[in-house]
Image (cartoon, rainbow, N blue to C red; front, side):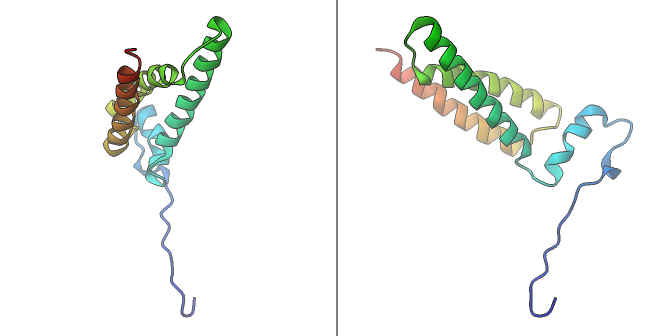
Length: 115
């Protein structure tokens, strides 16, 4: 390319997998090309949990608060991300972002639900 910049793209391949890596190695493969892959997946699961719990609560009781649904969903996402970090699927950097986000939501829920 004349006068332009070249961009080096690193695509993941299966050379890092071996017999010992197992399913955790296969699930960690998308992180090698896009480090926030599992963060987006966990975020999508969180939104689905929040909306499902909110509308189910609204249907059952007739009234609900979105913060309670968000906080309870954060507990589930913290559990999933901890398991993912233990197995090497979620990177520790992403785990810290998820931890800070969830602690903020849960703390806000505790501070506002004491009325």
